[in-house]
Length: 525
Ligand code: NAP
Image (cartoon, rainbow, N blue to C red; front, side, top):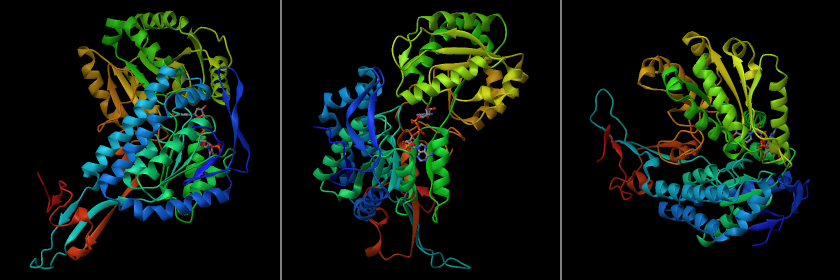
């Protein structure tokens, strides 16, 4: 399995002719070979034309065949073995153990979606049989199922080179829905992207599927990304990255002759509320858990806890003292890219220069290139409420602690928050009434509410919501992690008075797929 530096348009390895992209090992600053030449609008058009040609054959496959593709992709990724992990370590600076775990999660995601595809619940079949004798008007025979939206553009994320990149959650859920996928690789890990793309292309071939089911493009400077989002054959977009990037893609999608949905996961500071009784009972333990979550993966998780909200007083002082103790032994960690490291440093510089922000804890100083040093700052609720600059996400191991004078200030701080992926509550029995009073506000602000845990670590399962109101995501009605992510890439079609010979299998009277259908308002057992 060698790296070619080429894109994969269907089954063809194609050399680009745009700007050269080189991965950089962030732990050394060294450039990695080979160079990946970016694609052009012609390459985008070829990939999209193939995806369009693959759409109907692919979405009409037997569900078992579609599920088999997802399982084969997982097996092919595993078969790449250490070559994939070695390259991902070199391109991201992430520890090997983390990348082994991420590969496991990626393959588990694919296999979970295979299970979902086979079960067919997502077809959400609804049948309202004809009522020819109904008065004053007869009712037609009406049958609804979900169908694939069309070819989907996926933008690989820098912070999950496997689990949210070429064959990550967005691609897996789109393929599960029956949508061909065109991925724009993240320029930070082009080699990792190529190795995974080769695995996907092998799986497509082994399953005998049309080559346009999957393509991989490279590009930097926005040209390829914008061309992809504005190609009329693309019908939806999956994105994880910066707020400015997500907003630019949303604007491009809305500016099309036919606007399309962009499912962008952008920016969150994942507030953690420390309620008084819990803080009094275990300030030290909370500090330990907070520092572990804050510094996990150099803080480069979208669920990183970047804001703590608590009542001022001796218990908060004890918590901050313990945070200082734990953090001072926390080593600076290599960040994913020179650009992300610079953005982190700029965010820290802004907070450090802020007249109302006081640095209260700092990690070990950097000993190598692109290492982020963890930092925690303290502000009053009044200053936080007065200055939105204190609410900004600093992507990395940085957090702001907001000290509130009373419950009223705490509520005001919560109400002022932008939409979040998560909100965490640390509480004891004596805090339950206060937490219950806040719940309506909390539900309006975040996609996942946690009690006595930490937001980093996102389970891939049926009940997970990794989404939330803007700017956490561009569409609060959805999730990008978990099996419900498939719903983003589906739309309902109703078939009225179709003769049996013309009905899709899922809607046939004798239920050949064995689905639990909603018939005349009653769910089948
Ligand atoms: P990014 O700059 O948003 O880039 C992600 C992808 O979007 C790249 O493929 C990029 O392509 C494309 N893109 C960005 N801006 C675009 C535009 N205006 N038009 C068209 N395409 C555009 O994200 P990043 O490189 O991963 O990291 C930059 C910052 O994003 C980080 O410092 C961090 O603040 C934030 N981030 C947040 C999360 C999170 O989960 N919340 C995750 C990762 C990053 P091009 O290379 O062509 O520009």
